[in-house]
Each structure stands twice: as structure tokens, then as C-alpha cells.
Length: 343
Image (cartoon, rainbow, N blue to C red; front, side):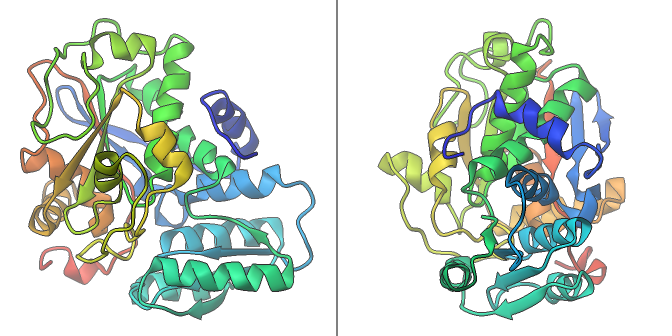
């Protein structure tokens, strides 16, 4: 499968049922929900795409599966491979956190740590896959992976009854693209909110791509507005939207181990260039503060990437209008708990 659309998401949901968790949604204040993907198997949404890719492939090769990852995708691939009884070989960059490397070892993965950033590990993994014939499970730029991640959006709409806006962190873009498609699939099935409250021009003044008329109408016609949140130091989608095509960006900052793609994925760019999407940037300081707030206020142990979307809301980079129904996806928990209140 080389392209992906919203019809692929319900099919993915049926395929991976029984392999992944239906993660909870909590309403933390009237009209504001947190979707807790940090409680998913291996601590992030990534198992959804990993299982869908592997289960879509038919008989898996004797050499197993191979992936490059900042850590979370590797954990997901290793978890799915163990569940399906195949070998997993994972390439990670040197920036990958020790917590994630330890998790990979615990899952029985064969680990190679190489290169300064994700793209270095991806190049090494591609070369190794050509040698071994292992099935490549891409971190974000495969249709089956995007569709699998989109099942989060299906669940979110079902659990909330529909929202006007979803805030989601972006690295390579597969998760945000999946949620865009998944929420659209739910809307087309009649699950969207009745009477969205957002008017034209709402949201961040600094957004590059906007939903135009806002969720009023979009929620019924194509799903809610998707606010894609990136660290200022890794603006992969933001830069691509400005350039009109995927471009290379520098990678750095507190969330680099999970949001460290240096270029937005092709599939993600195609989906996230649409009219329902806004792109906003947050500072590292805002991410650290949001992570601390998630712990102190809600006792949620999020990694920095997992707190990025919430940072846009708390810092005021994205400002909902009165009555706007907003969901924030808290997407990862692979972190050292000792750092939750210190950085």
C-alpha cells in the first residue's frame, strides 16, 4: 500500500483489535479532554502502526522485521514482533534516551545505536534491510503505519462524542496524519459533534496552515481541526508548509529523541497540507512546563514529546474560543520519572 486515505483507518482498527489497548480519555475541565496514549503498550501510540504494518504484510520473512527509531517506534516494533513470534532489529541514534534503550533490550530486540540523529539510524537500517530481506517497518512514512496510528482518532471521536479541535505533536508526521484521517473517517460515519462552537479565525495567530472556517462545519464535513504542534527547534511540518514541500531542518532540543525527524514524511505532508490543519510551534521551556503540569496536576508521567501538544494550550500558542471542544493527545511516557519535576 503506497497511499493512504480515511477508509484505511477503520480497516486498520479491525485488524489490530486485540493487539492494542483502547486508551482512556479524561475530561480535565469542561470541553477539554486528554487522550492518554501514553498508557498504550510500550508507552506510546506507536504499537498501532507497528501491528498494522506487520499484520498487513502476510507471512513475515524469516529474517523478521527491521526499523529505525528515536526509541518509541523501536519499542513498538519490538513489542509487536515478540507478540507475533519474529525477530526485531532496531537502529536508534545516539540521542535515544537510556530509558528507551533499556526497554528495547527488555523486549529482546537486536539493537544498533548509530549516528547523531534519527536520519542517520534510518540510513543504516535501510542498508541492513537490503542485506537481510527483513520487513521494514517505517517510523512514520508508510501507509499501513499511518492508518494504524489513525485508529487513535477513531477512538477519540467515539469516546468524546466529537470535538472541534485536536492538538497533536508532530515529528515525522505519521501520527498527526493518521489522526487527521481517523477523525475524518469517524465524521463521515456520523460521529462528529452536533453544533461546533468555533468561528472563523480562531486558534493561533501564527499558524502557517489553517482550517479556514474553523471546526464549525469542518467537524461535520471532514472532521475536527487538527492543530499540529512542534518544538521551535524541530519545525519539520512548519518549514515544509512554508516551503510548499518537505525540507530538511536542524534537529535539537528536549524532545529530539522522539520528535527528531529532520524532514516531514511524504504521506504526512500530503495529508497535513489540507484545509483542516494548523501548524504551531512551542518553545522547549513551554514543553518542560507542560510536562511538569501533567505530572503535578494530573499525575501523568509524560515524556517531553508527550507534553508538546499540551504545551501549545498552556502557553497560549493555541487559544480556544469560548465553547470550543478541544482534545489534546498525550502521546508518550518513556521517560525517567526522576526528571518529571526538574526538567
